[in-house]
Image 1 (cartoon, rainbow, N blue to C red):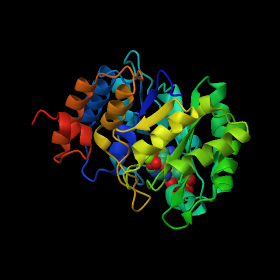
Image 2: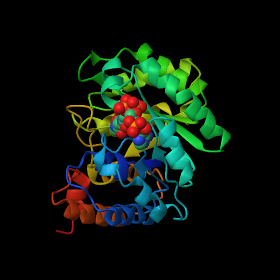
Image 3: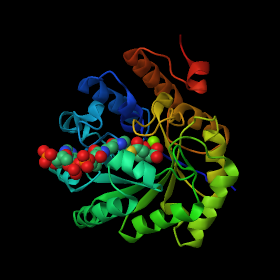
Length: 299
Ligand code: HMG
Ligand code: MG
């Protein structure tokens, strides 16, 4: 059966914008986050406390976060790659963080300049400290299905990294199909392997990119398996600057259209969400790839 309710983890302001070449003004980012919360999204990933040279678009995290942190009814997780990132996040009063691991060596190197083991060793005290401070911790795992340098990724390699993140105390994991190559059968195989290793479905989110047009099919496969947390990006913005061939995330509008059609509650007002993504597309100066957004567009 399908769940009665799905929690959407909106990643537009972070995963969506991190790839944009032209700098989006801090005020526009704050407005984007406010409008997403207004549309009923209850988790909006706000920014990253990473090295500003690595992701220049999010170099304004210190200026942005205080502009949105007091929004009611919405969680605002932020990405942190290491202890320095955690300090920056704590100094601003963030109460939810996400560390981001990789299932493959190639991407760990490209994204974090570390091996998989080295990055896990860096995350361990970060997660421990965050838990001591009472924070909620998400652990991303990238390249769970395929990797642009290494090809198909063995399921057990993904399970190992997921298990390590759970063992260090991550409350929730997000399974990233960073380059969008997954198909539904592969999703079932990974979820089966994870449940077998005592990773509960309630602690799993799925994070699909739509490169090959499979994101919604993969999402439905995950929901049928019992997952109830789905990552998506308003207007389908996004990609990853450190993964060649990564295009946009699953568009939140496309996700909401499918979920509401299935009678699944999201709390999202699709009209407001569409208006927000149209507004953002105008700011960015190009149309959104979301099919639902185009179908419902007022222009
Ligand atoms: P590094 O060059 O190895 O850094 O980068 P380092 O540890 O050697 O430190 C070098 C300098 O950077 C030091 O300064 C540090 O203080 C400073 P110096 O002493 O030379 O003056 N530094 C920092 N400054 C600010 N904030 C920090 C920080 N850390 C160190 N947090 C590092 C290592 C992790 C910093 C770098 O690789 C990095 O920032 N990477 C981030 C990459 C990123 O954000 N990628 C996108 C997010 S992941 C993603 O999109 C995938 C996802 O969506 C899921 C999916 O789709 O798969 C989540
Ligand atoms: Mg991503």
